[in-house]
Amino acid sequence: MIVVDMIQKAITAHSSWKTRLKSSVATGKSDVTPADIKMDNRREFGKWLYGSDFSAAEKQAKNYRTAIDLHAKFHQEAAQVAEWALSGNKDEAEKAMGLEGSYSKDSSALTKELVQWRLTLS
Image 1: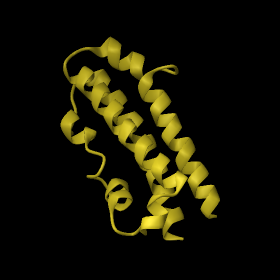
Image 2: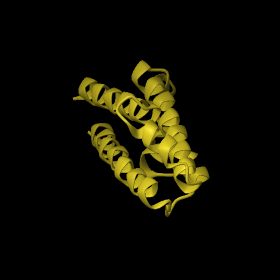
Image 3: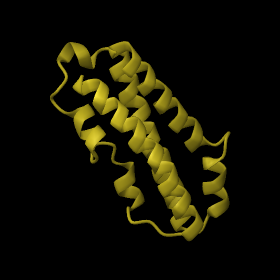
Image 4: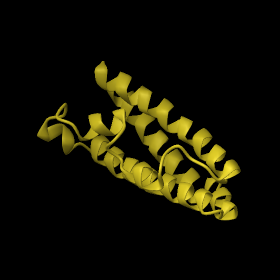
């Protein structure tokens, strides 16, 4: 059950990034640097995902591999939005966070994959 619980925590944590990024876009400030955001192994889910809890066989599974890839893309895109927000490029940041924006698409893809992964384990 720990895997299901960790995946659910990740879904919640990643959805909270949208709120944090929206605040950064609105204010031009952030308590986290874009370089730190880009690192996908510094927070609880990333540490767990890259950690030793998974066997070699589990790390070859489709859900795991897809989650790793999408998680990395999510962090790259979130870092880009933060970079635009902090540099005053509010229009680009808002565009990326819009419904058809790159951040929104990557965030949705990651959430969808995590939900699917959680369902296969339940």
